[in-house]
Image (cartoon, rainbow, N blue to C red; front, side):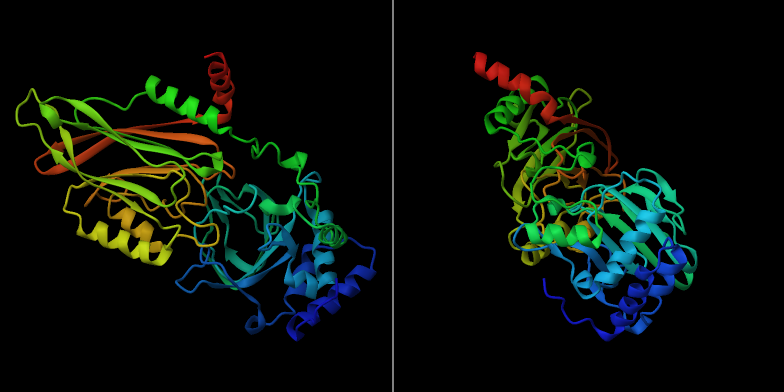
Length: 448
């Protein structure tokens, strides 16, 4: 691989790194900080990362070393590592010398400079990640959705990048954060890329397509057989029917990470003069989000129950035509009358892998009662929602499984009540690990 020309603002770092490599002493936090400070503030490279950018401007200051996903379905050597191989080797040697977990594996190093990452999920990477922050600053801890706040100043902290995380406020001269992670495609490298990655010092790189043993505890790559999936979900639906009774609503979904999409929304209806439940099954493996809009029909006598009358069923294909469908979804939500109940689910994926959903989508969900914590519906991740127009934030409910390669079947069961023109909702959520259930479904199918 021919070494590309190194920009002048990075050449200073590369020269300093080359000198560090000549020595035999362990590389310290101070060595790394001093090296990266050779890049002047105005010269820092930028990356387009709309999912982490703290403002509407999607550009942030930073660079990635090691592996970087490419359009061929594998990974290439990141541009900064091609330009600065000595700098990359200094960083990987520093990691080897200072990381407390010698067994940890990583394929890439994200280096961030002086910006506060907003709440996000690393949906295209494997979960296990390490972070350390260096520089002259106060604050700047890492907030995580599952472990709370981690103090990563000058010490490595392990976290799950597939759960929500963000940078806490900070002040000071400069803050450099270094995140060790592994792209999904780390094991789909060409021989030459794999050899170069190993020479640079990253530890998660392979040509075999087989998952590294270290990561097997974090994701399940087993395939889901279509016939087994159909056999299980249909039997599961029979054995676990939608909720029944006054104001009952249910939704169930799994994303295409399972290899087979599935989703339905059900509601109590008084159509035909009797109490019953209507279930709207959505087309399997259809991208975007499926929604139903329902009018509330309050009971006219104490003996009657609250029911729903369906107004319309929609599909907003945010995957196929992201910009236009986002606008259509936002307009649809804005035009809904107050107290219109909305159910939503997916049967494939809400978003395209390279086109994150616009913030407008999440703002629209908040107009239906979603909480501020709904900030990312990831690629092929199961998602469902129940709420109503005009609900206060947090009064609606959503279920989301952001674990990479998730094969979860998610379910929400809710009860809507109506009092003096205002709605309220109680709910419970549940999930089923599909891969634990499919063997029994397969056995039943072969015996029938």
